[in-house]
Length: 224
View 1: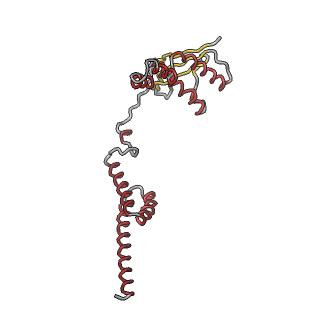
View 2: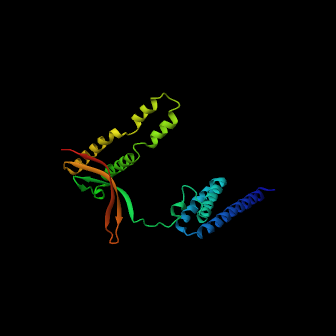
View 3: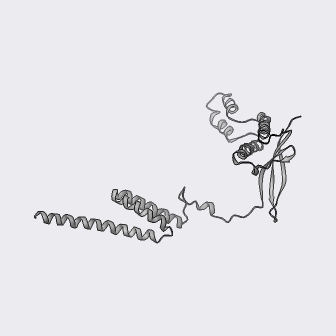
């Protein structure tokens, strides 16, 4: 076989190979175009085309993953962390009330939503944790873990010492309320004479107003 004939054979094989690639890409492009996400899929086509040229195995993996994700989505199968259908499995029914903390300063309710987010969270998050500690008598999960896992492996006093280092205790109640009073004083510039922390129900009325009820006092602080 002369040189020109060999070149012709190579050219035909090259053309056939590229035609086969374009046929596969055309099939997948048609599949993706029928989906209701065409704009993003068109960008993906360029990506898949580059992957196809680099590695057929990686291309097959991406296509299998995409098609598997689509199938699981329409079959309502959870594939963490994508499309958790359990979040939306039932119709949410308005409860009409919510259990929330409240803080009164000098006899007036502290309006937390009016504060900036960082300031509000500096007050709200520690106070919510303080309320949980009070309701559980400071018997936290950390204490239970130390007792269950370390009691048999260490000396009798070791778990108790570790609890004192890692966990809050009832003795720190007044220290937290004192800190909270000083922090609120720094924000508003007014002296805090009395402070009360508790929980209550926020009940939403038909006129979109909110009423408080079932108040439970958790902790108090006062100074002369």
